[in-house]
Image (cartoon, rainbow, N blue to C red; front, side):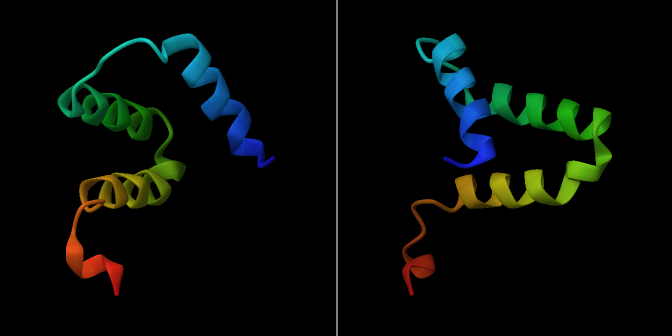
Length: 60
């Protein structure tokens, strides 16, 4: 188990039943980066990865 799995598991157990929009998620990510600027690059990579999940060109 990766260290990050603990945070993911906590997120799932605490909020797994909730429904959120990508607009809401985007705002929370912006707030997080504002409070933790050292995580700007990983958050940007995660957001880009989520945005492009269904892109056919990325399968190559």
